[in-house]
Image (cartoon, rainbow, N blue to C red; front, side):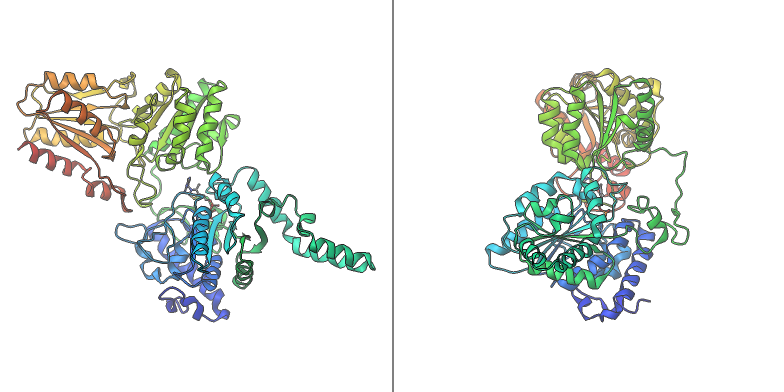
Length: 630
Ligand SMILES: Cc1ncc(C[n+]2csc(CCOP(=O)(O)OP(=O)(O)O)c2C)c(N)n1
């Protein structure tokens, strides 16, 4: 089916392709991306846009000795294709299949594991220094998007890069988009650079004009050439990168392989840190992705002909994200101190309607989770009630800011921690399975998890309107279960909810958040089998309702009691560990069973499949409890 791609079976095979076939190869790569991603889902638009850059990088490198580090890594599908993995692309993001991100364990041509934004330049700089110390001349590239330039680590790395005396090429893939529209001052600066794309022509024109001035012209040109600051300072406003000690080249057409190859080769020869500014079109070559780059950034399986999702969204099914977004809008109407902060994810966090309805009270700070949190602390100190919506995995970035800037002073900041638990196909770098551990160890922070959509609304209301100290609410990816009526969600600080209690219960289920519904089903099944159960919705991971737990244990008359503690979090530092330590201290005859995730990185795969695999499903729980009781 592919006439050129068929010849790419292993890394560096692209070097055997005739230059006249590059265009055809690019077309076939795009066809391969569309064919597979339309079935598996994934990051389509970013990959369609980076085809020629990837081809040029492979043409300039010798893999795996040379290193290409993909920032975020969501745009590495083309790299996977060109290293010979294209035949497996149909397994992308599926359990046991190719990862949607670079993984060193998947291929020695994946130079660095990425998933979180803005790490590439730091990692590349580390590689470059390591090679320099060892007198090795391996080439090092970092490929970073303009959206990821909103992250602080980029500037930390840049500041550090000026001292490098060997090659490191930063390829800035500028498509003028993050997931949504890019934001902020750097984005405006790049626009200025882009509009200076005639810089080269302008420079030539200036030189031509000066040359025409007898005697003095040549002298001025010579002076400018010899002066440390180059001519481009005259024509490009604020050469930020050059002023920081890097050489800036660009903007270059990101869809012209030959131009890219000669630019990268030139950059490598400079033997110093260089930034090559490349302009691309996100979604290039597929009309729907070019038109709707945000929708096709990360897309579920879709119909290639129509661009429509294969499984259209059932409007009657609400996700936790939808519930959060709607509740934020309704609360903002009543509470004019409520403000919302997100980090480059207005759609993903459900805040897009809020951003339209309450423009002045909405802040998208870019991919800058650390800043988002301290910024929110300032908003709170200044009299607002900020809700910071960040996915669990990305909140890891802001740990110090949560402790140091928010909690130590007790600022009333509410953290909406979406995608908590197993997220599925994005895999290891994106699982939200550590937040209970890292948040519950912070003094002064309340941590809640709703059992259903109604409880999420009630918890948000409680956190925003009744609390006056920091609160985090963690909720999972996916559709809500509706177990309750909103009126019954009476949230009281540190108090759990007893769903049913049996004084002769052999199994007492203490479940948190997403695990309450599963625990209920497991308890119902065990009851049908004649095993008596008690079911408690913990509601709070911190403070834990130890009084209630002690009381249930004391009142329970069963001879053998098993406490089953359920949470969608790593076992390491989770609530099971805390409750078990407490109970063991109180009564060593009670057995505790933690239903949670192992102290490991959880791979990619279908969300429910992974829950089943790691023992979080109803069947697995019933089997384990039954066997422990019997
Ligand atoms: C720390 C962190 N926050 C948020 C994200 C979610 N995210 C993934 S890609 C992306 C946008 C990246 O934009 P850009 O770097 O310009 O790449 P493009 O897809 O436009 O090529 C965001 C916000 C992330 N991966 N890491």
